[in-house]
Length: 137
Image 1 (cartoon, rainbow, N blue to C red):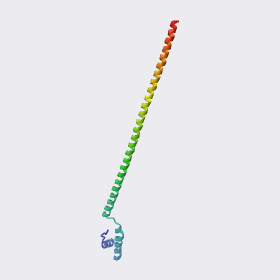
Image 2 (image 1 turned 90 degrees about the vertical axis):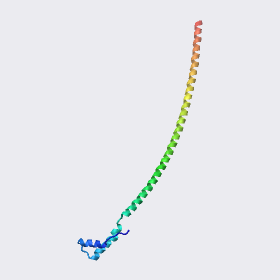
Image 3 (image 1 turned 180 degrees about the horizontal axis):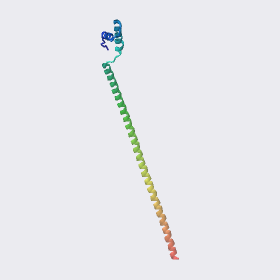
Image 4 (image 1 turned 180 degrees about the vertical axis):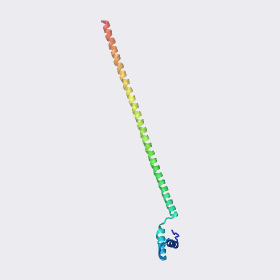
């Protein structure tokens, strides 16, 4: 970028400040300042371009990050759904197994009750027979 630099004004300012340089040296200083110092200066336009570039880069990275977060969220939702499905299957399986255990337990209790009833009936029959025998004696 081209900058307006008043070399004559620079040389005059050196002379007015009391720097005792020949005119040619003052102008050489001014030329050196223009060629080396002014070339390194940043303008507002340069800063605006850099800021626009950084903003554009940040916006692109933000979009990429949002896309990554959305993908991770989607994968996580799929994983949670799979875990829920597995848990539902496990709960159903456990309920069926518990129902089977209850049926088996009730059947065993019914069987024991029947066997106890038969034994008690047999004992009662033996007792009646013993009493009848005692009464006849």
